[in-house]
Image (tube, rainbow, N blue to C red; front, side, top):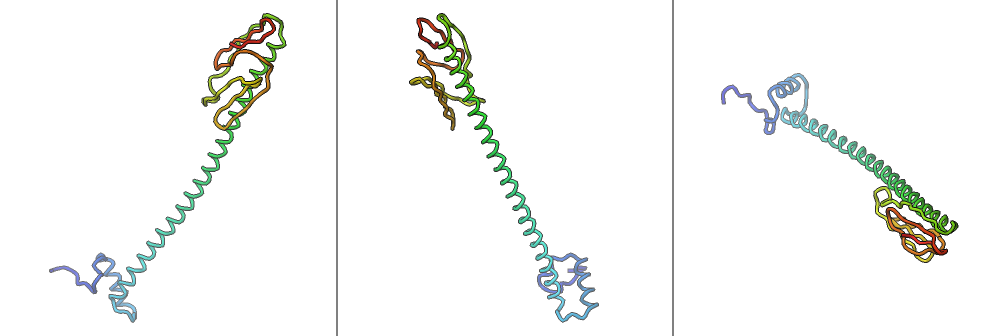
Length: 174
């Protein structure tokens, strides 16, 4: 091949002309014991080693940052879930005490008492069950159970609008 620079050793073809010129001038201006071919291979090995070390350092730092981000996110998510559960429990207790108070008010009222009251359809968007069994009102939802003792009444409570009356000494719901 005309005009092509001669190769100094096998494996040196990966260097461009400028790199080869720099290495050649280093070799000629210093008293190395190594042949030029070994000098080129040594230079190439050091460059690959530095690149590999940088890549490994990047992977280690990236992994550490990712680990701390995931751990932080898990702690925050756990805290949010606990607060949501506490909020649902407080609202379920509020519904239970409101219904208990309505029934107690009807029991203590005079003959002919009539009142409408509202029981929410859901608790913060979550479904729940409400019923009256054996002189107790029970409210249950996911991971929440509350109950309150109530006086003897007839009828069953429902979500939405409820009617409570007192006739002939008996309190009736719906």
